[in-house]
Length: 114
Length: 117
Image (tube, rainbow over all chains, first blue to last red; front, side):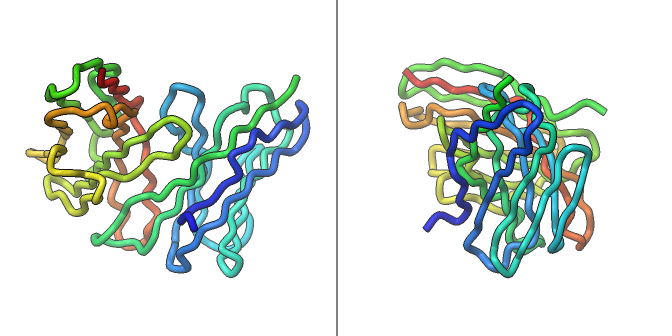
């Protein structure tokens, strides 16, 4: 079982629709969760971070966290062609000096059709 | 506030050669990370510095790999005797220290794409 799992896609949605990206993780001790966007050939760019159960909204993006189900998701409202990219879910385990690394999923490729 | 910078952006080398990459973090970020990303995969952690101290190394970081951050500012990652399997994007990230809240966020540089022929 991979530590962080994502559907590789591609997830194809029409312009203006809601894109829903999902991620599950295996380590119940995980405390911090991040969504990064990565365009082809570029480096990851932070979209959202979430630390507590529930929803967190930032513009067209909403991150949802359910620690009991070990599930984190990203909703993109009013999807635009410029949102077409790979979305990486990243998880950090226990915070502190001992380990601070991010564990990434393989990413979900989102294609927004004009 | 400039972002994380990495140099070079691209490196082509022959198998068996040594290569060195440089990373300059966001100013005042005392934490610096190296990751490696291959096609179709997410970034994989290599190593992490807090100031000049290397606090964690992945098992991926074989004895051919060495990283330094001598003055707690920029960092270098050296790969000795490169192999074709080392071909990847090498990403550097930095983050500020946010105490015990656990909310520090890692910001990535543009990466160095290594091709070993």
